[in-house]
Amino acid sequence: MNETELLELVKNGESSRVEFKRDDCRPADIAKEMSAFLNLHGGAILLGVEDDGWISGLNRPRGEAEQWIMNIARNNLDPPTIPAWTSISIEDYGIVGIVELPSDSAGKPYRARKSNAWVTYIRVGSGSREATRSEEARFYQAAQLVHYELRAVQDLEMESFDLDRVDNYFRVVMNRPGPERSDVKNWRQILLNSDLLVASGSTDRATVAGLLLFGKNPNRRVQQAGVTATVFPGKHKDYNTIDEEHIRGPLVPIISPNGGMVDTGVIDRTVNFVERNMGSDAWLEGGRRIRKKDFPRHAVREAVVNALVHRDYAYEGTDVEVSLYSDRLEVISPGRLPNGVTVEKMKEGVVRVARNGLLREILRDYRNVEHRGMGVRIRIVEAIRDHNGTEADLIEEDDRFMVRLWKKRQ
Image (cartoon, rainbow, N blue to C red; front, side, top):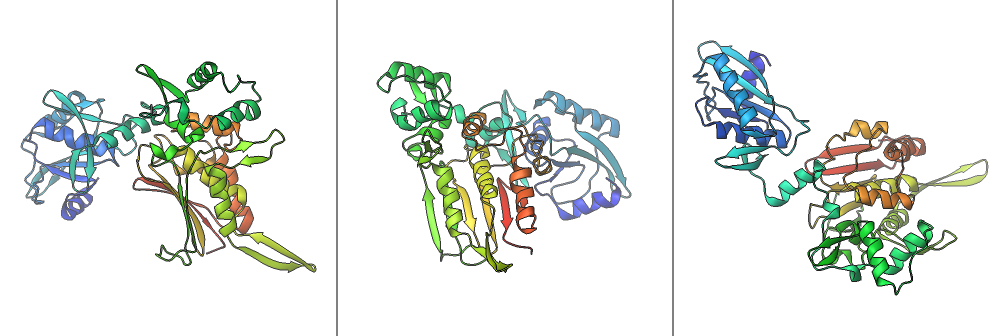
């Protein structure tokens, strides 16, 4: 950062990425801002700048100020970090110390020492505040320190499962003989061994993943289990819709021994919704009428499966959104990408990280998930390009991830 860039930051004031601080404040105040920046998009703390933007300069010698910052980062942050430090002398004002925190740190969540406690902070606008319980839980899940899908669901035991669907999974999909339906003891052990049930106190509870996959009524306790699918007449959201469906129930289908579909799950019902509502192009070719759907079915399916498998289920009460417009399809899943996953890696087909590993593995058994991690590249990016020459948009913004497919060249 040079003097011109520094003055521009000061001129623009504090923001989600910039904080002004004096270097005679408490170490806890600096640690709080470090934690907040590290837990979001990174940012810079400008030492020697007042809240109103007046450059008062450092009160400490440069070397002493740098050492003070490094001590705070080592002793007042968990895990410790090493921020980037630079200092710039502004004529007639003094020296400004610049503490830069990266946006891609792998140590999230960062906690700051507050008296005798450790507190997780997040950046909201131009200020920092303590993370709520659910926000902190999402940090731990993103860091794969806690797996939300394996949490016990309150008050729901083995009876909450659709055992026809469970039996179908083991006997038909996995080709694995199972006990008789009346053999509750052995079924319970199978479900425990598969992480579909989890021991919780004196009883066994359904896990979030088990309920999502095989539950009779997943939304009874996991309200975010499902898809809101909507067809809009134009290019923007509107109160007037052509078709709308709140798709609820277990994710997986019941499959016959010959591979036919006996009963659909949320994935198939969502794909069917898109397919019946998408348009098509038709033309004559050598005397024959050719008709082609707006989107390839396997691209739609991959976008829907990814949204349901990789979404952040810690965002309670928020469905996956599937929206058809006159010019495009958008599939939106709540939550940012897991740590280490980027849009560029997804396009290259080199992603091996899964937020919900159990969901991924069981849906892979149903052949819904590409085992080499190349599903987005092959089934979405390359598929829509081959289909109509358009480029798929993969967009991470705020707390959601979107796949956008275009009907034709824009």
